[in-house]
Image (cartoon, rainbow, N blue to C red; front, side):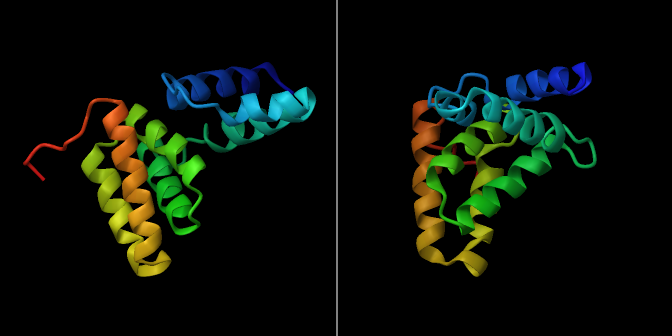
Length: 132
């Protein structure tokens, strides 16, 4: 693996996952298999998330939408934090979650909104301002 991919992985992971208190996927993977954890991280974070075809904000909003529809709440929590880290507003994230009700159903949307609220509470960003 090239040093360029390693550097991109570190830079993107730092951008997305700084200040994340929860266990990061890399830490989970590493506890089982160090080599595979490195390979996953280099591919997912260093090659996919580091691509410059779309902005990081857009990439994270897409990720939030997909994880909401799939009801993957642990991973959603992580990517809500990443979305905030790359400059998405809580209102933008909520709007994306509301949009998914059409495709994933209201129960998935409600669960995702609860996850969003929990993250915002932890970051002292809740309640939202009345400027909604």
